[in-house]
Amino acid sequence: MQFEELKSNMFERLEKELPAHLTYHSVGHIKDVYNAAQQLAKEEIISDADLQLLLTAVLFHDSGFMIGQNDHEQSSCEIAKQTLPAYGYPPEVIARICGMIMATKIPQSPKNLLEQIICDADLDYLGRDDFFPIGDTLFRELQALDVIKTEDEWNRLQLDFLEKHHYFTSTALKWRKAKKAENLESVRSKLKH
Image (cartoon, rainbow, N blue to C red; front, side, top):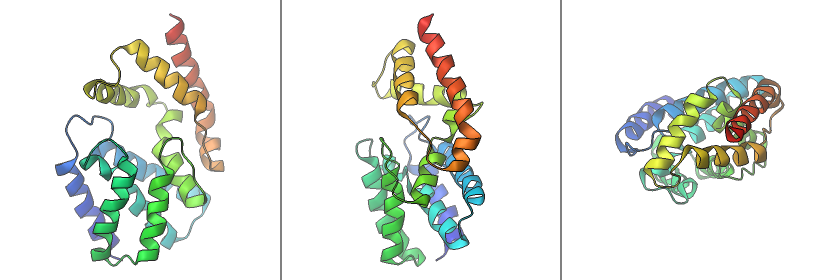
């Protein structure tokens, strides 16, 4: 499997084809998830072969946005199925990659460790110091898509999301749970004022 070639071609393609109004679901987000997945995978001690599959799934997990918003995970799988054979990925491996992509659909439903890692990496920022600046990019994206209009609506949406969300891997729980609880309290206090 020619992973390095795939990686550079995929980043190039995402740069060109992801719509400009996607301020959150951008190449920046995919790179952020990629880095988080690498760090989590290292701590969770997965094999190099599994790491390659995980990072391949990360490259594709939001590629469906090149086609549209609705069911973007399913579209991401279709893009993976069309693209990966040319890079030497066999069908059974592509099926595992699609399993990881589909696990990121909200509400997340991972069935194994690799799926848990991609889910935790995808929402890693919820438990980080850059929660608010990254959240602002999602706020702007949802405004552009006319999903929400006001900051108050946004904060209610965030509160609901944070209350329902949980990390799956022991590493993410150790690294992110406490800060996520702080971020949740900050959002809650914004709504009170």
